[in-house]
Length: 487
Ligand SMILES: Cc1cc2nc3c(=O)[nH]c(=O)nc-3n(C[C@H](O)[C@H](O)[C@H](O)COP(=O)(O)OP(=O)(O)OC[C@H]3O[C@@H](n4cnc5c(N)ncnc54)[C@H](O)[C@@H]3O)c2cc1C
Image: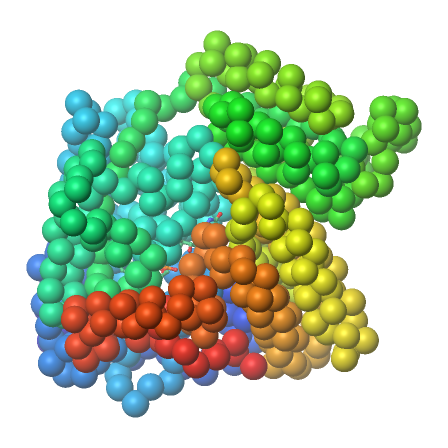
């Protein structure tokens, strides 16, 4: 009927009902999922995508595009609806469609997941260099429409910088934007697709800028005496254009957790602590991870420049061992949350970004909002924070918080919603961005107008109406002002 393979198996419908935010995991673990898609379709070609959209548009069926389903903003969550809902899983659109080695451009089907994409490029000696923590499970199309940033965004850029061209199909239109190294042919329509979260159409293929595969990767760890020393050092490294690929600065609570875990098995733990105290590194210390990729000569030169600046910030080197462990485990850390749930502790993350001049204030305010969000329950929420994805003019702040679960999963979700609401309101009030890389989804949508203004929202709505007049494409993300924080 839809012109492509369709499944209505209960397992498929359940597996495509929610993303991977904390409430999604809680609902899937406890079986309190309020709505499922009526079916899951898997188009194999762009023509099949087009045919599904035409038929669904005619029949009044909602369509949720699905890449890897790793959204942490309610981006793929199916809601109860008067209309039937199908999920369009793009996993069959996952091939290397073209490689232009002269221009260093590669074109892929949008449904390709991180590991397969890197494997295909590595066979020819290239990399994309985009490694979000969800890399193993998320897709190229998903990265593009959520404006994702990988852990090495400092060196390789965020996905916005990597996209050279793309194709998108909507119920009432189609855009085929060829790769151009630069263009002044009117506003850049690619930029409209970036961040569109499935509202403007289904991305079927993407041309990305690729780089030679680096010979080596190294991550060096340093402790800086205070948060101020850390922030000043990261800013100095950025503004001196040291060609690092990653910088990540943990605040004192996050550093203490990292040190406790890192030193737990070391027989020399107390000696190390004493040595650090002698070097002026106490409880206010901040852990800085600095990553670099390339050939051995480039790595050596870059680290020499970086160390010079880090020493000026009174940094004490911990060498490359902590970095090796971090590189080994970097895609596994988030799933520790499943084990914590088993022992009654819920954890989630949220992120923002702001100019350097505002960053201290934003961290203080958002931290305070999260810590105090469950005061009425008599609980002080534990918060860790790090700076990552730095730019010459500012950086992203990434918060991890922990709170106790309740016996009733609905109550745990209500506690999560209280924290998320308090933090999001404070981020908006502080003038920081609603999201540096997780996107808007359903959960941040009510606050979008505060960031881009009512005319900004009106312009985006009119584009959605032009491409999708019957609003069948993922209608509750990005532009739906109703608060849907689940509680
Ligand atoms: C453990 C964990 C760690 C994470 N770490 C990071 C991180 O380091 N950096 C980061 O940027 N994000 C991170 N995320 C968030 C998430 O992985 C990103 O938002 C990612 O880009 C989503 O890709 P996806 O393919 O899974 O998209 P999905 O979750 O399937 O979809 C997300 C949104 O995009 C739409 N969509 C998907 N594919 C298409 C398409 N082809 N055409 C049109 N619309 C489409 C969906 O409808 C939905 O609105 C993390 C998530 C988890 C669970």
